[in-house]
Image (cartoon, rainbow, N blue to C red):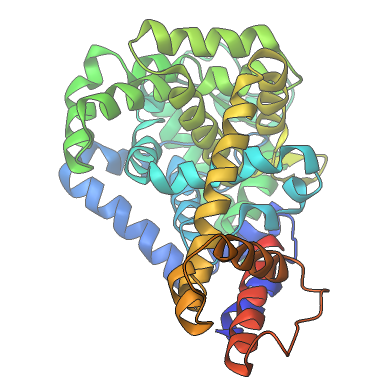
Length: 399
């Protein structure tokens, strides 16, 4: 029991998201889980294999030179966060936002409660990038000299092949570059930017209807979940662009109204869209900026700040939910150490009557306030051990 308490306390040490994600990408367990998930999806939906040949570029995507690097990073981080020891508040960027603790905690719960829908989102959200891919390199750059200038007459599929050949040739000339370093250094040298205008809209078009149904079947999604998936894929770029640079209450209201028009509960949709945004931009993406990579938390923070202005009822709902969860958790602690009401009445031989309520109230206060001395005349040594154990569990949960 005490080992679990100490592990829980140690887990509260904060670290930057980028460092945590880099650690997750070095974990054989999480990387294997991610790749197994992709292989499973690929076996049912062969077109997913195309991700390995769809180029991507810094500054937006410095995870690696192909779309699959982005998908695998998202999936790896996703599985790492499903670990029972994970706490989203261990991220330094979130821990410092004290007024958003409730929101981050709920986001973590949504990641777990809606795991099937969100895993399906990871697989589906960029499925149409190959259809709308384009390239641009500034005049006078090495990328332009290689045929990647804006307005090039080359077909996108030819440019895609040329881009990957060029990047792999550059990799062969460089010594032991990581996937991310390769993407960054290659961008520095050639200045080629890859774009996918309107790919989110294309992903929910008739062309990919069969693909969406196959993914829905693979993850056993209900009709409601399939519509939710369609909506979060359709608007995942809006969630980024609306809040990338600042707070916008009107855009937040627009997002909620879209869900309502689609017959979905707006609060449920906004919860899942936030989790999807977090996975896509903060977890799954390495942004290359001013010579170094970062994890971009701005869209997530700004969407939550927009919510404060546009939908204050959502925080009130979270507060009620938090209080209910705290009560349930405290009851579970009491049950775990055998200090639930029935056990206490039996151990202390408390007769029926109004005095029982006072005994329980005093005991609960004693557990929640560890600085208070335990009355050894009132409680047996066995009861004192249980009270101390309950205190430890309670403190660990509050940390």
